[in-house]
Each structure stands twice: as structure tokens, then as C-alpha cells.
Length: 239
Image 1 (cartoon, rainbow, N blue to C red):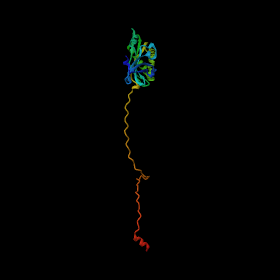
Image 2: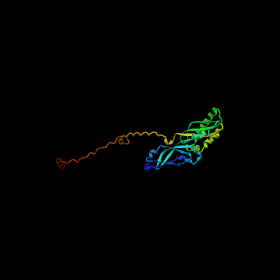
Image 3: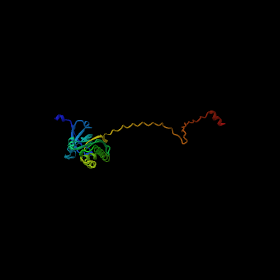
Image 4: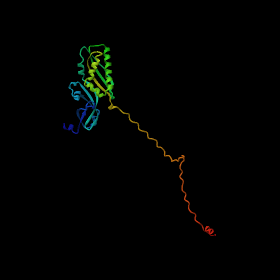
């Protein structure tokens, strides 16, 4: 066993910053790059310490490694199917819907909410309930960031609101969000490569010009050598 772990370093995995940055666990590796992009499923009790949420779990994805710490991003949410099916009883009707929402901070999420109705209403009531759930979550997501949406679902605050407001259409016995899938997040948004700047044409040096826009001409200096006097010239001067 000693040889198996020899040469490996331990890295701490933190929860997403939007959900508290709590330490979720540790993992050993010899190559930190191998941890990038790895998914991890975490029970909500380990995240918030509430044992009553034993049936909820989230997925996180490692997106950055800082020294010996792995930083993660939210990658999904789901409820145990056994818990959901336990709420559906004889004489009740299950209504579920699947739709996409966009949060205020640019997350594209696919939600799958449930509602269990008291009794067996006609299909028109089920249709109205699906429309209500879609409008409700779209409106909330558009006004709040992803972190607030996930926190409200973990605390079941949004589920209780769906139950209360949906009962105006037809009595709702139970409401839950079965699953959240991340379709696109700001962290993984691809950027188009920048175009290389074209080299600017080199301007030819212009010759200096005078005020009258005439080219300056440089005159060559001509040296004038003195003429030597001859003998005949001296004789003429004496006469």
C-alpha cells in the first residue's frame, strides 16, 4: 500500500464559491492536470449540513487548480427517484415538465419540476399546471443569479411557493424539482480567436519642403583660387 500512494499529492476539493466554498473532500494524484474537468457528486447534507435533505445531491466540476486546492463549478442537481415516487399515491396525479431557463448571470439550465395533484383532474388542468411551473421558474431565473436559484431549491422555498400558488389552479399535494442540468455556463464559454492585426504600410520619407512647397536645393561651394602674377604684368606696372 505504501508503494501505491508513493509520489502522489493530496488535493482539497472546494464547493463552488456561490455555494459556500466548503471543503468537499480530498483526492490524490501525481499529475494535477488529470483532475481538470473531473465531475464529483456530493450529497446536500455534506454541503449544507442539513440531514433532512438526504435525498438531494449536486454535481460539481473541477475548473481550476490553485496550489493544492481544486476549485469547482456547479454542474447539476437531482433528487433521488425513490423519494419522488414515494410521494405519488393512489388517487393522485403526477404532473411534470421539462424546459430551459436562463438566469440573470447567464447560466442556461434545464429544469424538471414535479407536482403531485390531489385527485385525478382532467388533462386541461395538467396543461395549465405545466404552463404555470414553466412561467414561474422562468420569471424567477430571469431576476436572480444561478446561485440564488439553486439555494432556494435546496431550501425547498421555491417548491413551497409552487405548491401554494399552484393550488389556486388545483390543490397541489407535493412539489419538487427532480433535476437541473447545466447546458451552458459562463465559465466554459468559448471565445473566438482574435484576428491578427494587419501590418501598417510603411510611409516613404518625404523630402523637406520650403514654405512655397519648393524643394530645397543645396548649392555646392566653389573655391576660387588666387591667380599668380606673371613677370610681364610686373613690368607693365613699373612703366
